Each structure stands twice: as C-alpha cells, then as structure tokens.
Length: 490
Image (cartoon, rainbow, N blue to C red; front, side, top):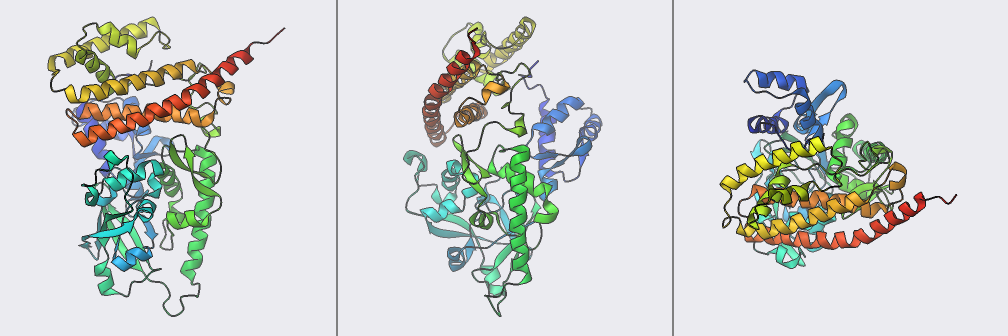
C-alpha cells in the first residue's frame, strides 16, 4: 500500500537530516538503527533505507552501504579560471562554480572562501545582464534569474514584480581576490584550485595556480592534462546519459559523475565545467519540459529510456501511478476545507482519493480514517484569520494539483503505449506536479508568507497554469489515438 502519511518521528527525522549534512564516513541503515537504539529511538530498517534511498544528499553504494554528499565531496579538488571582468575588479562571483561539490541548499552568495586560513572578504562585482546569467548557467535558465534576485545586492530591485527580467546592468556579491593579488602577480588565465573543507557550513579553501609566465603560448604539462580531463568528463557524462538518463537537475547529474569518477576528475590539473561546455560538441544544456538538463548536444531530452525501463515511473499494473501524497498536501486539503467553512470531511477525502485511484476498499477506509484523525488535530489549532493570506494561494495551488492528478489518471497507458505520448509534454506534466507540490510545502511551512514570497509564488502558479493548458490537449489527443488503436477490426 502506498505510504501517504509520513509517520517517522520528528526527533529521528531531525537526527537523520543532521547526519546527511555532517557525517563523512560510509555507513549502513543497520549502523544508524543501532545508534538510534542506543538513545531509545526506534526506526525500522525499511524506514531508514527508504529515507537514505530517496535523499539526494546521499549516494547508495554496494552491499547496502551509503555515503553522504558531505563525505563524498569534502576535500575533493575542483577549479575554475576567473573571467577577464573578475580579474579587472579583483574578485570573483561564486555563482554555480562550486557545483556539485558544495551543499546545493546553501546559496552560493553565502559560501565562505578561505585563502591561507584567512576568510576572503565580500566585494561588490558590477557586470552586464548576460555576464550575470553566465555565472548561474548550471542552475538552468529557468532558475538563474531567481538566484541572481536572491543576491543581497539586488534586494531593492523587486525582480518578482518584473517577471524576473534582469536590468541591463546590475551588481552581484563577489569574493575579493585582493589578498591573492597582494601575494602574487595573478593574471587573466590563472586559475583557482578549490576544495570544500566543511560541506554543511559552506567553507571552501582556495589555492591560486599560475600559468607559464616565461612563454604564455607554450603548452605545458598542466594544459595537456587539463585537455585530457575535458575528454574524460565528456566520456563519463555520455555514459551517464545512457546509464541513468536525465537526473532531477544538472547539479545531480554532475554529482553522480564526479563522485563515480572522482579519482580521474578531482585532480590538481582539473578544468571547470563551464570551460568544458564551451569546448565539447557532444554535450549541451538542453530543454527538458520547462527545465534544463545536461544531455546529448542538440537532442531533445526524452521522458523514457533504458534508465527507467521505458516506463516513466509506471506501476506494476502498467499505468501511470497515482502520485504519493505527503503529509503537507493532506494538510493543505484539510485547511482549504476549513477556510471555506465546510464541515463535510468526506468532500476533502473525495478530492484526495477520487474514485479512479487504484486502492482496495480496505486501503481506502484505512486512509480515510487517518485523514479524519489528522483533520481533528488540525481543526483544534486552525485560525481562520491567521490563515487568510495563505488561503487563496493554497486554494489555487490545490486546484492545479487536482487538475494535474486528474490528467495523470486519464493517461491510461501500458509500457509500450506510453512511448507514443509526446515526450516533452509528459516531462512537463511530471514537473508541474513537483513544482505545485513544492509550493504547497512552502505554504504549509510558513504560517504567513510575506508579500514578496506570495507574489513570487503567484507568478509561478500563473506560469504553471499556462503550461498545463498547453500540454493538456496534445496529451489527451495522443491518448485518444492510443485508445482507437486498441480496437482491431476482425
């Protein structure tokens, strides 16, 4: 039966969340269970394994072992060469340059860089719009503007009100290179070699690397090794596309490749991902629904392939699955009912578990009982007036959630037929579900979203609603054709 309700104890969850941020040794679910038991905390091996298997901050290893991203990337080498603009202003913009080595949950502007055990100060960097975008390429075009908008230097520009359209010129928070310039003749073409010292706290060490000053046109051994590095990265990325397909983000794709091949890629003569993308003819950043992914250059990123059994997450019955419902989504439905001042809990249950949901009567009754219990808890604490700001946004997000869920149920395909659906529209449908779920999670985690945050989410919903309208017709048209082809004239 699907696990709709997250029953893990909050104390255990907080411990695991801390573990995956700070623990650097290889471990097993059994090791963690024994440790929890020593504090009289109980969690089954299945619960722990599911947590680690589904957490992007953890890499599964052989023999049911795991290592955290902190353990995988702390101390590993990576590098980049500052741009000509950065050299002129004696600073650099972290942007996406620490991907995939730093914690993706820490904004790059908050990373702390050390040179000779001293913290490098922040410094304002001025640039044009296109240069700003280039610093955030690996986040994807769909997110780069939001990362730029989150920079403290741009706090007064109110990008959300301008649909995140960047001005022609802007400022970014950089990290000063002046202490390095004081120690050496650092020039354009020189590099910075880096390694993360503390993953959870975003602490990064910098070591400058100078090119051959005697003859800058002469290719030295480091240049030769770096060219070999670009070739290896290309090979490993192409292999990853075939093996695991497009990951949930560009960052995750790179994390998998760099961890798998860290002995070849995390070396003193390493290049940068940006330099690699400027050189390669086989790998590019391609559209994937409404997002971007690393993929075979010039090719559309498909929804299905050998990496997912050509099934796009198909269930055992061969149909597109009913998406699992986390606790914050259930809470959203219940609060929406309360805000509408309705008392019939069966109405909320019907919205959550419509008739077509593939559940037995006993499963449906059990889940209905759990939902009623949850409703009793929420009703005691619910404040209609305090919820007023979030309520309209929540209601709108739930409407889209239900539309997406309903469209999924109409795409009743087996594994062979699903390949006949338009792939980019299918990808977009999955992404819409993820994005609207994220909005519901943000609303539930904030009792009162501020005006800017609410406005940003409203804009996001507007875009998602338009995307849904664009993909619904072609998906249903393709489904109608599949149904017609099922009938054979005898």
